[in-house]
Amino acid sequence: MKKIQTLGAAIIACCGLGTASGDTMECGTHEIMDGQIPGQTRAQIKAMCGTPQDSSGDDLFYERGGRLYRLHFNDNDELESIVEQPLED
Image 1 (cartoon, rainbow, N blue to C red):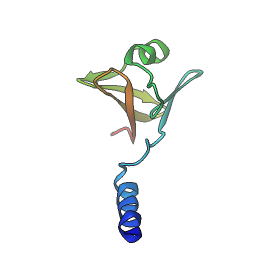
Image 2: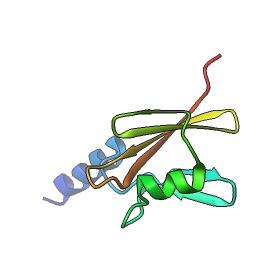
Image 3: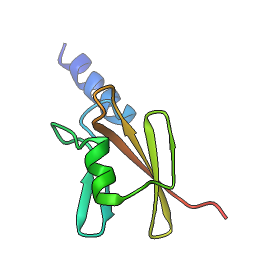
């Protein structure tokens, strides 16, 4: 039984199904962080970061420091995750 529990924990860790990733994005003097409970709301983030470069459904997109950040919100309009990627040329 212990081997099954260990294997299950390893699978969850590898697949990212465990705890939140803890990604962050800076907006001036504010730090936007996913995984907070309760999560920062879409309205709070817009107040700190301004108008996003783009939005789509549950996502806001911000460009910061040569990188693009996708902020995904849950059904309660709270920040669920931040995905960072380099800007495409």
